[in-house]
Image 1 (cartoon, rainbow, N blue to C red):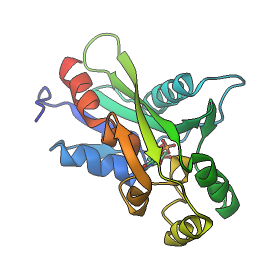
Image 2 (cartoon, helix red, strand yellow; image 1 turned 135 degrees about the horizontal axis):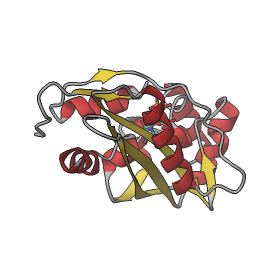
Image 3 (cartoon, rainbow, N blue to C red; image 1 turned 90 degrees about the horizontal axis):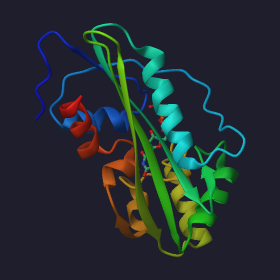
Length: 192
Ligand SMILES: Cc1cn([C@H]2C[C@H](O)[C@@H](COP(=O)(O)OP(=O)(O)OP(=O)(O)O)O2)c(=O)[nH]c1=O
C-alpha cells in the first residue's frame, strides 16, 4: 500500500500485539522494538497531550540512523480523567462501571520519526474516537472480566474482542481505539 525508499528499515516501537497486527495488515514489513519508558502522566496533563508526549518518547527511545520509527500510545478519557491499563480486577471493574451507559473518548497519539538523511524529523498526531457503551450490569462486567481481555488494555476493554458486544456506537476510527489509527498512520508515512 505504501512504498518506502530502498534500504530504509521500518520499526514499530511497540510491545502491543494489536499494533503489530494492524500494521502488518496494511502490508508493511517492519521490525518490532518495544520502547520502555515511564508512562506516568504529568500533573494536570490533558489526555491528548499525554498520548502525544508518550508516543513521541517511545519513537525517540528506540530510534537509530537509517530507520523510520512508528510509535503510539492509547488512552481512554471519561470526564477528563485518563483511564490507563487496569492494575487489577477491581480496577478493571471500576473502569467498566465508569464507562457503562455513556460516551467516552479514545485518544491515540501516533509518532513517526524519520532519520534518513540530514536532521531527523518527528511528526506526531492525536486521533480521537468517541465510543458509546450500553448499560453494563454487574453480571456482564464479571463475565467480561473472566475472559481476561481487560487486563492489558487501556480503559479495561478491547473493542476488537468480546467487549464489541458493549458498543452501541462508534464515531471515528475503529483502528484508533484498538491502538493505531491506520489511515492516519499510513498518511504520515506517505507524507514523511
Ligand atoms: C481501548 C482499547 C485499547 N486496546 C489496547 C491497545 C494498547 O495495546 C493498549 C493501550 O496501552 P498502550 O500503553 O498504548 O500500549 P502498550 O503498552 O500495549 O504497547 P506499547 O506501549 O509497547 O506500544 O490497549 C485495545 O487493544 N483495544 C481497545 O479497544
